[in-house]
Image 1: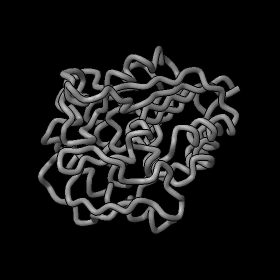
Image 2 (image 1 turned 180 degrees about the horizontal axis):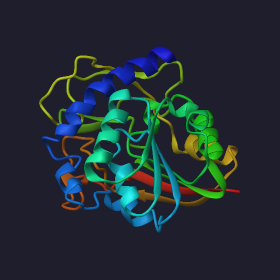
Image 3 (image 1 turned 135 degrees about the vertical axis):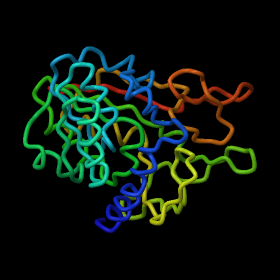
Length: 271
């Protein structure tokens, strides 16, 4: 398993510099630096009042969303496995004058690395697909929460991840569940942002987790589900045919296609 993590870490280390340039505007860094709240519409509407709350953002990348949450009044800690990402997050924090703590390490080691508990654990967009073991992940979430603390998650919907668009047609391509020891191996020379810069360490490994596995892992870790919502938009173009919604950098399927759940969000509370 360590070989899978190492390949992914090397790939994400390279992505950091590309994403910080934000040539295609996916991360809306110019707006962020200008003080504009750049959370996507779904989490912006659902996260609620976080003023004064202790919040940990797992798999935070270079910390832009962590710092956005800090601007909303939370006392924030971000964790990521990429040394380059954590270094960039600390630099960005100093640049914009928004304090936050950033910790480098694997998400499975988060309780030991961070050494404290939080009112909110926050995970969004393209996080759990990099994790092979959801039961262990859910226990990490529970261990990081104080009693009564809440967990917020928004992700791509598992029901659409097995599909790919080939020659203009969206067809099933992968199984709905990926075995932990047989991840989906991908080689891509560019990042999902659409930037032209190439990545040398192209190989990555990912896992598809059905919604039942996600929910049962959280329930098994002692969390109570507060809500589960499905949405018809994503903050990236999963399929080439998708079109901008015109709001907050989101994309949807084009007119004339069936309306499908493209993402989901949930909140769960630690008993």
